[in-house]
Image (cartoon, rainbow, N blue to C red; front, side):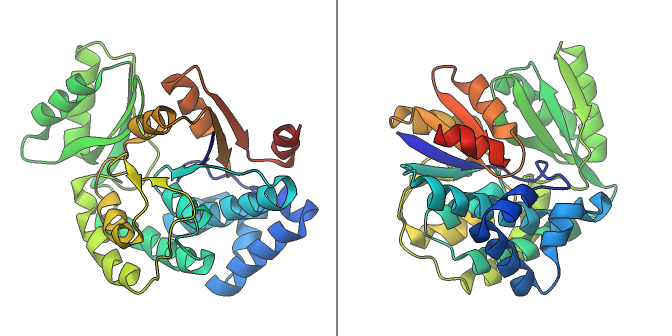
Length: 306
């Protein structure tokens, strides 16, 4: 049994998707569709940068979505590979919803463009951030966040894999949490180069601003089930999608549990579709009995077809 998984913000790189667009008309048309829909040359930004513009959240999110969908369409056209589950990390959940047939690509582009703007505007620059904590168990980090808050907010944002967690919140509370992590023997704890405290309660205003946009978007029946970030449970009810996406903005990403859920349902093979290989690395750490593979370049497609 195969699952298709899709990366989120942080996987972007200048040049992403270019080799697919150069070699496969369906990928080229996907980027053209994104350019037309957004009314700016997103494809040029993906293929040639500049990097500082690609790193802006409002552009990063549609760029990763477009690249993931372009590669997905190539895989579908060239391999006919069938998958039984879909999931995406944070922003990647929108790519997964396109793959599952729930969201039309253009509608997903519209939502993620707004999502990026709203998330960036939810907290002023310099007020909040995120940090990675490596080599500590979840209950200890949860306790540290409670102790470090001191009237501010700091909370677990990403449960990525065993020993790899991300916390988010006010900068002061984050620094206190990192100091406590070091004192209690974590392997590594460091601030991440992001501009906002994603997937923390500080993002709640962004979720609420996103709600009316999601309400205008049709959600079609699932062609394959999806594992949601918020619950790490199977969702096949399109009526629940909008509320889960609103909650997703300010709730932690339960990625470790999501992968385990799919494994418990019989998934033996994971195909990461989109820029980078971050999720492939996480899957390897979560369960060493399954086979993850990244398709971020045409060479990865050739390996998939071998």
